[in-house]
Amino acid sequence: MSLIKRNPSQNMTQWNREFPAFRGLQSLQTDVNRIFDEFFRGDILANDTFFSRDWNPAVDIIENNDNYVLKAELPGMNKDDVKITLENNVLTIRGEKKNEMETKGENFHRVERSYGSFERNFTMPGTIKVNDIDAQYKDGVLTLMMPKAEEAKPKVIDVKVK
Amino acid sequence: MTMTNEPLEKRPVHSMIPAVDIVETANSYIVKLDIPGSVKEKIKASIENSTLVISAEALEYTGVEKSESVKQYRREFLLAKDIEVNTVDAQYDLGVLTVVLNKKQQFLPKQISIN
Image 1 (cartoon, rainbow over the protein chains, first blue to last red):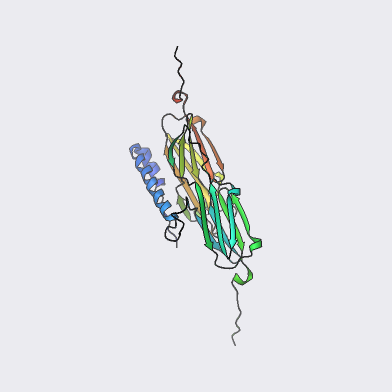
Image 2: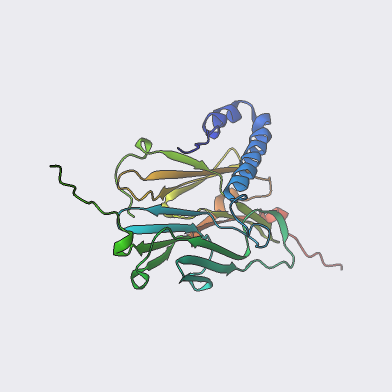
């Protein structure tokens, strides 16, 4: 089951054209939605690093028959600034995104994007073929393909019914 | 993961609001939005009624073929009067969309010399 947010912006566009005065209301709603998004994205209860790190990139971990697949959203990072290690079946992703903006003579109207260092640890549910891990970084998304070791794959045992 | 030709409406859609940085420099406003996992062709930026509308799509990998869902990013910004809407420039790199909105000539800071 997943929570799917309703998207009010479609209806609101028409609404805006007719009543320009309500536009501010929509941007307020957008902001409130974003705050909720960030709150739930933070894995506050599950993650002990919440208070000690600058940011907490969103991660999906998917398991299929042959692989564990991890996707991490790291927009704006260079791939050389991301370090991935696997030790005792614990996968660690850490990195640092430097704030590339100069502070001289500039006004910051909004700063919502995350900067600084992060570290996330995941205990993998099964054994992984360490030498066959494939890591790719494209368009701000890190994808790790981690092939399962034979013993971690689901086994089908035929039981003969007599 | 590849983008297939299957109509997007058939897939589950998750609405997302991209995080944004807005920085004002002497000549321009620089708007940066985090839109990880999209491609240039799936990003739309337009200015309508002095509102900048950014919308984009990214596929979410679910591990099962043909069950991929779509992340739909959308955000609107009401533009100030000092923006030259005809010279807006946008670039997508490393999952970040950078939009540069130049200020109109008459709003640029000017050095006035005293005779």
